[in-house]
Length: 137
Image (cartoon, rainbow, N blue to C red; front, side, top):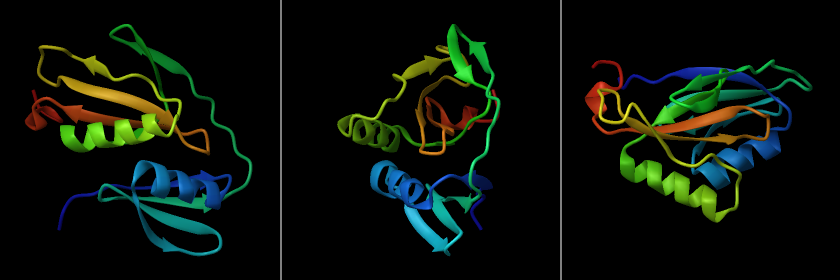
């Protein structure tokens, strides 16, 4: 079995969340009910539950001169898929951070961008120059 992650998050609006991930990111729909839905985000399962109003205190941190959200999740893609998602979101005029390269010239070099979903979650998309450096240097 392929290794995947599962993440369950509260959701403000299931319809808007479904549309954002399916229609804009290009993810696939999984199982669902009236109160929750599963999104297949590049082979990873995110369950959004209709939880109503919630709040996270989201402090930021600085990494190589960029201000990044401490609370975020995302996926690691090959460069072709990364560029496809980035270009799709830009063509739909979503507010996304520009592509930033981190650890340039070092093990772990990767390109990254963030977008905010309808629930105010920060979603990061990454592509590593050398896929073997995702966890190891």
